Image 1 (tube, rainbow, N blue to C red):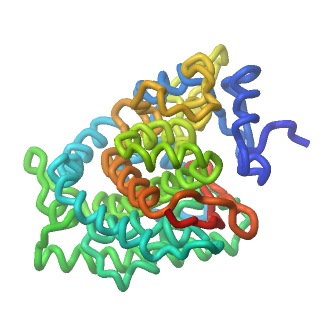
Image 2 (cartoon, rainbow, N blue to C red; image 1 turned 135 degrees about the vertical axis):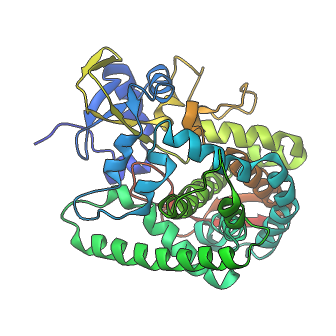
Amino acid sequence: MSSRVNLLAPEVRANPYPVYAELRRNAPVSQVDPGGLWAVTRYADAAAVLKNPQLYASEGFRQAYRPAWFSDYPLADSMLVMDPPHHTRLRALVNRAFGASVMTRLEPRIRQLAEQTVAELPTGRSVDFAEAWSVRIPLAVIAELIGLSPSVYPQLKRWADLFGTFTGIGPNDTERQELMRNTVAEARQHFEQVLEERRREPREDLVSDLLKARVEGEALSSAELMGFMFLLVVAGMETTVHLMNHSAIRLRDEPELMAKLRADRSLIPRFVDEMLRYEPPVHGVFRMTTQEVELGGVRLPKGARLLVVLCSANRDEAQFPNPDRFDLERPGPQNLPFGQGIHYCLGAQLARLEGRLGTEALVTRFSRLSPGDGPVRWNSSLVVRGPLSLPLVAHPA
């Protein structure tokens, strides 16, 4: 019997923080289940790994997305799993699609979406916030960025939910493997259609921008374009959805915090920053050692597979006083939730914008949130942690 911590055990998913605190104290770089990954749990070690792609390559991530049961997952061709120089080229092409001018263009639309979403939330009775609130804004934003019609929203939601569980599918879980392969084929077919349409008739959207983009005369390849479409669905939706979910849970658990934000909206950007530290939606990221290396006092062989546990690093006592306390006065912003170095999240600005406008709309319409009927159910993924269902009651202002 393995005495290693299993990070996907239901009780760890429900509250991983005591487990991580113990690992930081006693075994900051140690092997965990599933799969014997080396969990990196302290802030300083996590930052060192993320800042040094020469020693800790993202290519290792590619293995996680090319398991024996599926060799053709488009995320394995995305910049998530690339190191320089390929990553540098791709990043330059995609960067301009997420610039400040795009955020300015999107802000009024996101505000409108947020206000519309809260206006449709029922008051005084239990509702699943994960479905009725958290997913709706990011879903509409990603669909608009790519230029998809509202008729595709239900499919897009289903794809994002499933793709987010990729790293939680075991080698013997043939039923979920089959479902994943079929769903990827369905999404791929749809995205190929969108790409083909934009080649024929470009529009004012991200896909048209990406098809036009050139760095030193070079365009994105078909595999890179498809990898980016899948990356957008997973990274652009899953992360922001769970930022919204975690924000709602925090407001439920701290009614006085909600009152404070209602009284002073200028605190909301700080709320979003502290939220990203306190409960980052990106739970962990994979890396692989390119040579034998010492990390946190442990000798790691070449080819060791690491899980950099961002949500543990963000609660490291050595970096943050009273890390388990949600503190609006904490100096910020804390950028580790979006990674560091060359892989710093492209969508960080967009996630913050959606988090801010979403929270603003929520605290404007409601005075408090209380627990709804039934428990919170958590997802199963090493990369993203968040609720699959979140029953809450919203009380009118």
